[in-house]
Image 1 (tube, rainbow, N blue to C red):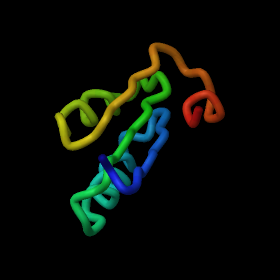
Image 2: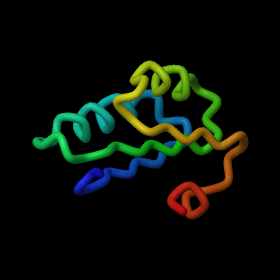
Image 3: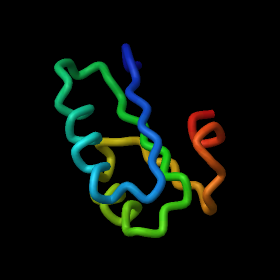
Length: 72
């Protein structure tokens, strides 16, 4: 079981999301999980995020529901 989680929300942030995810994955320790919630992006972010495979837990929302919904 992970000791800590890093949760990243994103909506149309293809220019920045890779840096954020790579930074979270680079944190020391193997007892972490990186959860990324894509809030209905239409800019190719989801394609980039699916490329991480099992290294992240990815939740893709069908439509943009706003930052509060993505965080919840």
